[in-house]
Image (cartoon, rainbow, N blue to C red; front, side):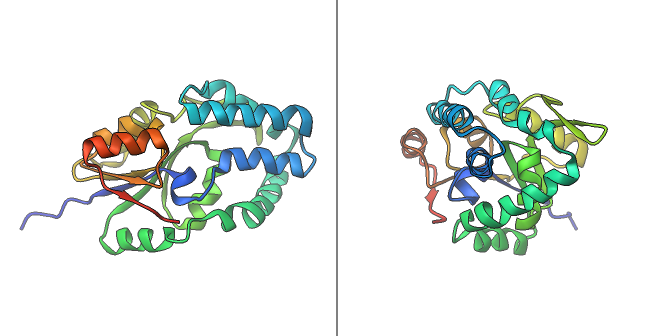
Length: 222
């Protein structure tokens, strides 16, 4: 009897499983907490987010901008700060239909994976809270218990998501056969085009037009 192939259920995080952007929200949270200067950091954070929406974000520059404040704290201190971020910002941001979607894929025996451009400092606790066991994210460098403010590898962004997914599949014995991918963003068109089942979630206008032209299914989790 042929063993059933285990399918991958791949999920973008920001504005997909979340009804908001965790990366941008982290910047707003740091401003609100007085960790960074509102006038300088807040304006730059908003500008980077507009670049992301437009599809021309310099991901390395943004990642280093976002990670720089982490260098002021130990990982223990950052865990405490992040717990408050989860409670005040992220948990209320989880889209209303997210849990039902995740349950559907768990019940089907699929392997759930978040594939996100946001760095792994921000997203690891979110993946854990959602009960998603695998996370492919932009890697933040941490040496001797301190974040350096740099990346420890290439960003997980646009076509870079495919590179990181391919590496992860090779390391974990999975293939792309039968995989589905959920995303809201035109930045994810390369990975959506790769999988057998692309599913567009509350899309931006560019992705919505692309989805209509390619007969990709669209859903809302909101």
